[in-house]
Length: 198
Image: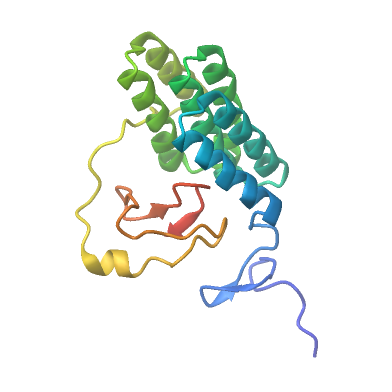
């Protein structure tokens, strides 16, 4: 008997992942992954305006595909690059789109952390007024306060060993020593925002 493409509970099936089947379309395509790596390189080289523009376009692609968690990550990274470049109107506009993505995603704690990273960039750049405005924008849009980064949980070697060798979403190689663990012990890809460890 042919297997239907649905599992118990109405979930759709796709390529095998974590002993189950993954929803089709949760991976970024080859072109999007290449663009993401290029945007990451632009950000590393200090080309903030170009990195912000590219990350914003990639967030739009993720949004169109219904990958809202990734869209939040890319949108907030775009806003952070705009903040580093001093383009505060772009920070506000990009954050507004990312807030809509965060509403669609529904994971408020993760979104609060993503927006908190933008707040950190603004505050580090001595743009406290812009940081306060963004914090109010997030609170009004999501009903939660953006969380400024703080020290994560105590991480041991075994926790790092369980991480995958590469991100299942964007295929970027994962450096176990370079990732940050969230308060709940989860880990997000620093490049695309995909979940490395739940």
